[in-house]
Image 1 (spheres, rainbow, N blue to C red):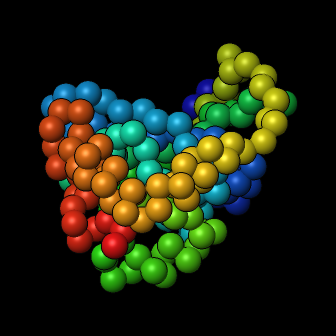
Image 2 (image 1 turned 120 degrees about the vertical axis):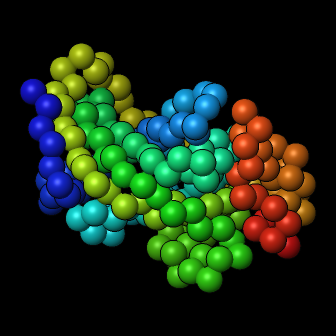
Image 3 (image 1 turned 90 degrees about the vertical axis):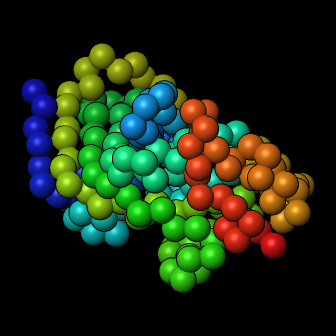
Length: 185
């Protein structure tokens, strides 16, 4: 039942844009595989083989550390509404930090968010769809504003301290690229 495609087609893009949640998957050379749910207004399909995902502050920073070791990423969406479908985009990603020259232009693709930590510029190599017949129905109620309020309360100094304490290394000790030059000042 699975079908593979070399690019994100218009129907895939419409499906992606309709979803309120997506999942990321990465793994370093050793250690834990990371799968994370993502929400809020943090993803843009920029072309048939390009996705931008703006990563917001979280309790860990596995994706950045994994990509520095092994550059591969999977993004996944699944429908919780009437049309059963699972869609995965497989590829590689470039990590953009706040001090990188193209941060401002890429970050401008999204609404203002103090807790924005990195942007992943994903080069999609393959798209796969599958049925999703076993996925249950869920009703979307609303976005949570907890992360936004938390980042606003922390402020730039608080975010910098948090990133230095919680986001510089993965669970397996790999560097994530968050350092003094890549955090709010």
